[in-house]
Amino acid sequence: MEEERKIKENTGNMLKQALERRQTEQLSSNFSYRMMERIHLEAEKQTKRKTSIGWVALLVSVLALVGLGIYVLTFYLDFSFAGIMPKMNLRQDSSLFAFYVYIALLALVLLALDYWLHKKYIWK
Image: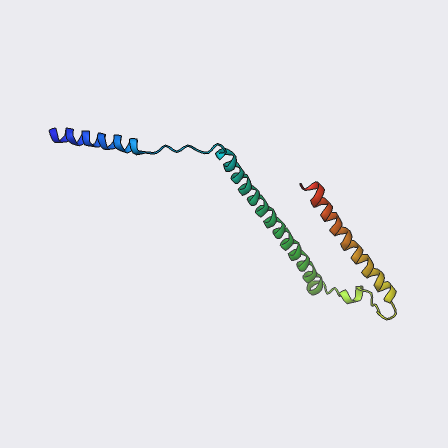
């Protein structure tokens, strides 16, 4: 009986000593701000990851549908693209070919300019 009381007293004393030795650390004043900033950055990373996965999935599905369409037209419906496409002689039609190249380059430049303007002014 007396041994049990001594054990309880020693346990109580050890707990008191451990609690007294414990160091209470204070959080820095901007802890909440830094933590919320980290959470915001992680949420932004996840949003970008989901967006890029969505774009990749869309691109893959579009390419698969176009490929499937070409496959069906070519092999199941006996459609010939050579019969539909105009036959161009580049030596005779060089001005027409140059015009097509000019229009294609102009379209690419305008698309790049549109993307840059959207990125700079709208998507911020």
